[in-house]
Length: 219
Image (cartoon, rainbow, N blue to C red):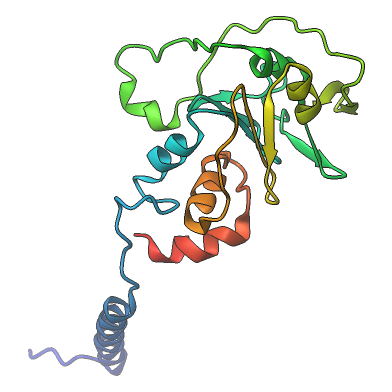
């Protein structure tokens, strides 16, 4: 007996053939329309060299960014608050950046000695959040204080000035503090974007619109 395919089996075979053709066309089109991958070594945001570029720009300062729960002290990434790690973000109110009160000990410190990365985890250095011993710090009466989530938040610039620090705040919400004159300039847009991206948190981008400029370029 000779088996003859039914009309249904013929339709299935044709559909499979047609779909394979469509997939091939789509694959070729996708390969032709992929945007070029940017160089990974030029310090562009979200590339492999972005972290080093941002850290090099911030390594001489204590740096915070409105909206981020992290700060940088001499290039080391730290939490602003060790008590409320889920909501301890720096906040901006009426142009003033406030931080959890427990961060005052770092803003007043002359030196910073973080706890080292545990042996065997050195590969995580670009994403490592350093721990350190926090001490109780008195807040001068002239420093503005607000309540956030039942906790005291202090004006970072007010407190920094009370301990003789130099400060610089950019329009984007970056605040730098230093014992010496601050030479940072926010005129380099790519570097500025790279620094903002360094303050991203796992659950939140500091400037979501900024990512649209870079993410489509990345593989």
